[in-house]
Amino acid sequence: MFLIVAVFSIAQSQAVAQGTAFTYQGRLNQDGAPANGLFDFRFALYDSTNLPGALLAGPVTNAAVTVSNGLFTTSLNFGNVFTGASNWLEIAVSASGSNSFSTLSPRQPLTPSPYAIFAGAAAAVTGPVSASQLSGTLSPTNFSAMTITNFPEVSGALPKTNSFVSHGGRLLITATGNGYPIAAAPTAGMIVQLDGVAIGTNKVFLNGGGNAAFVAKPIVCNSIAAGAHSIVLSALPNTITDANSYFTVTVEELPY
Image (cartoon, rainbow, N blue to C red; front, side):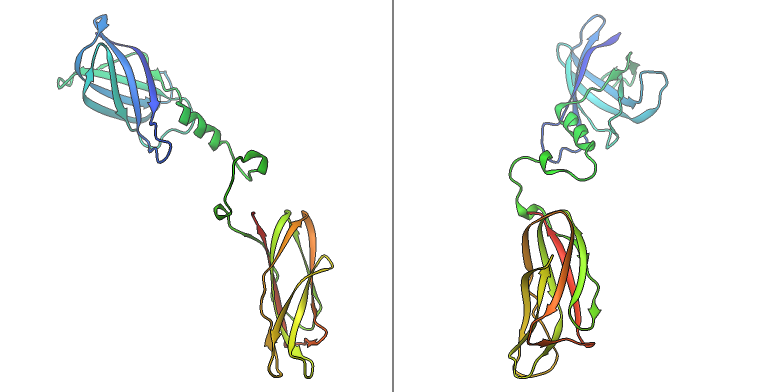
């Protein structure tokens, strides 16, 4: 007669790329005394202790497992079947090679290892994570800029106005457009204003007349408050814009 006196499971000790296999340890008695020798074990995973219950995975048979003074260790891999619900392990044992399995009772509950407890906490995180939930130094390379608005291309004479809503922090604003210089002016361009304050210009240096595209110069704005903001594009005093002029603005939130 076989009896599992005590069992417990230990997840893999690697912190990265753990996979789905875990180590299972137990103590087996045979006829009232600690067992010794080679034994075949058959494991099946159920959703409860009730018979028959719902079979979740298995059975998995591990042959020729060494049992010494009742103690044994073996590896199990049911695949990615653990969802956080309680699970019970049904164990059957046979003398090695005899294929005469005795199902042990009761089924054994699988308790979480520290890594599984951590994973359960991580699985509960949904939606945005606030800065207060983070610790340590996070490199800017871990993040990418997020476009919060991309003003559609518009035509016509300046000024042009548009608005957006920011979560606050740093902004990267890129404005482009085109226009004409007044007679004899060496440059043409426009001024970019954020909430009524000039934050940069886009210019083109000309050797002659004609419509020309302004050089796009990304503008970084720090310490921007959360909420609604406005952007105004206005022509430099020496610049003419008309129905042949086109403008667009992209606003991105920088994560650092």
